[in-house]
Length: 507
Length: 115
Image (cartoon, rainbow over all chains, first blue to last red; front, top):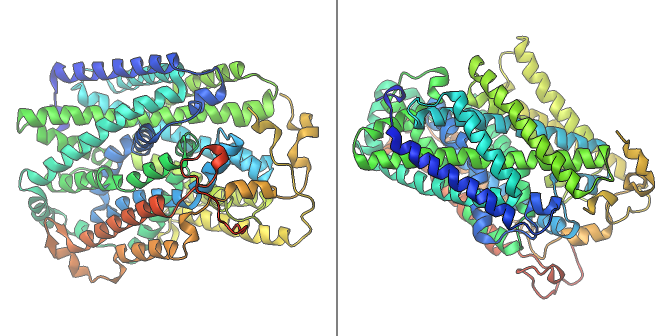
C-alpha cells in the first residue's frame, strides 16, 4: 500500500478533532492560570516548572516532525551511516552539560528572558546581541517553516486527502497561534506535555511493531542486501569526515536552539533540570532510533523512492502497517496524531521564542525602551501572528518549488551553530570579549554563506569542502576569532569592571 | 525609533571591561560535569569508538539481529554516551545557592576557591 491508497477514514479525523480541542482547552486553562500580565509570566510561565512538565516540554520541543519525517528520509537516502543521528541527538544533551549548570544559575539570578539577555549582559556589546538575535531568528523562522511543511504533509496523510496541504497547514497554524496567544509558555508547556506523551508512547509502539512483524529487521537486512548493499557499508574517507562534522554541527547547533535554552530558564530548580536532562539523554534511543530504523525498513520495502518522495518514507512504511490488522490501524492513527503533535509542539515553542526575542531584544532594547509589559505583550503577539502568516505563505511557496526537508534543516543549523562559542565559552572563559565574539559570529556566518553561494555559482562542487560541513568550517573560524581576539585584547589593560546588572535586564 | 544611545547614562557598554566578580560567583555551581577531568575525554573516547574509522569494509556483511555489527557498535557507544550524560547530570552536577531556594543547595565547604 502506498500513501496515495492510504485512507484512515473518519475515525482518524475525529481523533484529530478531539486532540485539537484539547489543545485549545489547555490554552484557555493556561490563560486562566496566569499569575500576572508580564513578559516573564507569558514567556517563561513565571516561577517555572517542576520535573514532570519540564521533562515533557523539553522532550516535545527537542523532537519535532522533522525527527520522524526528515530524519527517516535522510536515513533512507544515506543508508546505515545515518546511525550518527542517534549519536548527535544524545550529543545535544551532553553539550547542555557544558553550559547549562552555569547558565541556569545566571538566568535565575539575573532573570534572563532570552539568550540575547545573556549575550548582552555577558559581553556588553550591542553588535553581539543583534548578531545573536539575527542568527537565532533566521534559524528559528526556518525551523517553524520546516514544521509547517511537515504539518501539511501530516494532515494530508491523516485525512486521507480530504484536506489539502494548505488547508492542513492553515488549520493547525490557527489552532497553534490561538492556544499560544491565550496561555503563552504555560499553555505551550502543558500542550507539550500532552504532545510529548503521545510522541513517546507512539514511537515506542511503532518501534516494537517494526522489529516484531514481517520478519523484523532480519528480513529488512536481506532485502537491502539485494537492492542497495552499498547503503549497509560504514562510512570511509569523506564519509567519515562528514560523519564527524555532522556530529559537531548538530550537537552544538541543536543545543543552542533558543526555545531549548529558554527551557533551562524555566526550570524551577536545578534538581528538576538535572533530572530532566538525565532522562533526555536516553530519549534518542527511542525517537531518533525509530526514525533511523523507519528509513532502514523503508529501504527494504520501497527501494525506488527518490527526491522529495524519500522524505515521505515514514508515511510509506506506516501505510504498509495499516493494511495488516485493525490493531495496527489504530496504532498508526495514534502515531500520526503523535507526528502532528510533535510538529505542533516544536513549532509553538519556536514561535513563542521568536516573539520573546523580537519583543525583548529588539523592540524593548532599541525601539521603545520605556514600554510597559502590557504593550510589549501585545507587540509580541502581533509579531508572532504576522510571522506565522508569512511563514504559512512561504510553506506554500516551498511546496511549489519542492525543496526537500533536509535542505531547510541545514539552512538553520549552519547559522545557529555560530552562536555556540558565545554561550559555551561565554559562561566559562573569563577572558572572552564581546568584540571578538561579534567578529567570530560575523566571520563564521560569512564563511558559511560564502561556501553556500559558491555552490550556487558553481565555484566549487558542494557545501561540504573536504567532507566537512560549511557550518563547521564557519564554527572553526568563529572559535579562532574568539580565542585569538580575546587573548590579544585581554593582554591590554581591561580597566574597571562593569556594574553587575544592565539596566534593561530588570523587566 | 529611539537610538540605544538615548539612555547612555545607564548604558553598561559605556564602561570598559568584562563582567564583575559577582557575575562569576553567581555563574559557578558547586560542582559541574566538566570540572571532572575525565568527563570530556570520556565523551570523546566514546565518539571515537562509535565512529567506524577502524573497521574493515567487510563488516557491512556481518549481521546480528538484522543490523550490521558496526551499527551495533555505534549504538552501544550511543547507549554509553547516554549513561555518561545521565551520570553527569545526576551525580556530577550540584547547584549550591541556598539564597535562591535551590533544591540542590549544599552547605558550602568550597575553601573559598572558585574555578
